[in-house]
Image 1 (tube, rainbow, N blue to C red):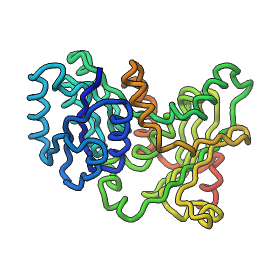
Image 2 (cartoon, rainbow, N blue to C red; image 1 turned 90 degrees about the vertical axis):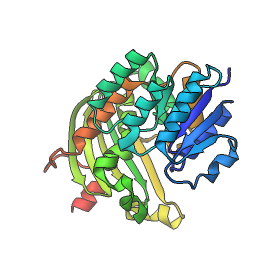
Image 3 (tube, rainbow, N blue to C red; image 1 turned 90 degrees about the horizontal axis):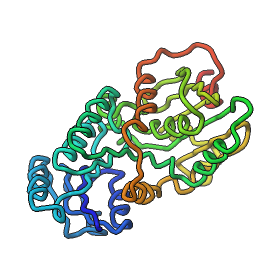
Length: 317
């Protein structure tokens, strides 16, 4: 049966991936909302979908559709709005009888997860979080390898993620910590979820560098010691990559072995939707460990010692 979707934040950066995923899974967008009306991207897949610039009218539309019956209502509401609105928009989905598919981070304050869990139970609906790196084939293969043949000793992991963002980033809601959760929450959350998923629960976290455009630290996980570096500063893209015209650099090594996770990084949303519609998907409890970790990083004191990520050593010196 084809499912009906509605989407909040259709004018945002990540929304086209959700629109494409809805279309590629054979489903239908019945309505979308965004305070900005530069949403011509909808014409590529769903030109007949209703569109609203006012949240209240979108709310009323979803309630009306709910009362028209199961074939007219929204079965899913995809949430692509700014991070600080995720909690409210997920609650809207549950209130109109839909399941929610929410972009990362699910919330920016971990205690809000408890409220969403209660609302899930009361409504009988479900909340899914987009944790797409868990569906990247290369990382799925590594996960299977680590499960099939556990490491004999703790792994030494170095994680580097640099993705250039222009001045607009810091002037937008993404550069405002109480709206985005900061760099570790807005971009880092997927990386931390990936590390916890692969190498087990967190035992200790240290922060060695924290600026508005770059953060670095270490994680002691159950099965690995991780040195990580996260940046949106284009100057941190290695010189050879910049010379080749690249604006991003992603690297993951485990005991000196390079693990490729760049290819397909931005093309995973259809897999996420396929998984959810088929009865899978990642839920509130799956999202919780990385959220709690990232939230703690926002206020953690800087560590004055300890082994640092190579990029952080250079910047520190």
